[in-house]
Image (cartoon, rainbow, N blue to C red; front, side, top):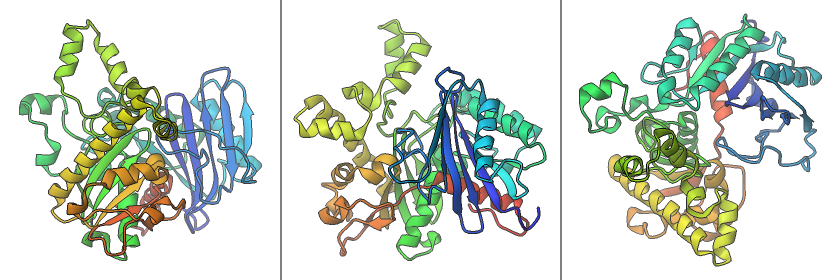
Length: 429
């Protein structure tokens, strides 16, 4: 790699979408960002933002949000609509937009393309340069990530076709959680059955948990190895992790991203026998139950909305369904904060991140209310402040810091990708 090759293109491929950011790793500057959505439809849409100045191109969190916050910031955002047949055409359209800014996909300054891959199983514990064997293993894991890994594979193969000479690096959501001890990762089922079908807790949102836990240590003025942190990644998808000295020791998501916290459309923790009951008594098929728990549950199942802003508006207006949904959401958060306090033994900080965690002050306040015996409290004034900077929102004399740390999964993927392909650098763990 020449000294000029310091740029990394980060791709996050969904089944019908493609999010991207182009970063210069000399100073972590964002050169461009955007989103292609509704791929394969007549109403496909590409939103491209050159020089987003460190902000997300889509104005939402990594798990889904409004794709276009408008152009009030004067960022030069460009939008095009019309049919985009597949991911190859989508990436070609992205390349054309980048070329308009002098940042084309054929640039010699592009060092690598980093891909978010949701499920890496136990095999992939670090960012990995993609070859045929890596592709085969990602494909082998499709049964445990049927909604995500196929789309991630499509993105990788598309990028390979357009830039076969360039390193393609897979960065896995599950990698950060591979440090969990067996007693945290294992389910209490027959070992032979579990091993035969790769059933265990893998965890997700790993790039976010890694980035945020490290940034929290920096906020506290300490080394990651000296800090124990509970990270609450609260977006449309939500997960918690217990991080001891920079290493994940427990996390709320499991075999799939369905387990754990209440989410926008996912149930989170549920008695496994509910699935048997729905099959036997309600006559629902496996696919129908899957659809129910993943897409028609969580906040949307409880009150018909999965936007926390709208739920809070309804709560303030006296809507009882919205109040119940909010209370169930917060109750689950409290349970995990308490459980992970017990797991860690000593907690230095509880940190909120992602779309809801960063922006919903009432959620943060309610999540720690009543946990004063654990050393947790928020300062009402600090909690009410809106900022895109890492900040502590607990009282100065609080035993445990409560913090808000904006996540940056794309930067984390870019850093890990560049460190892997740039000679002499060490992969960020």
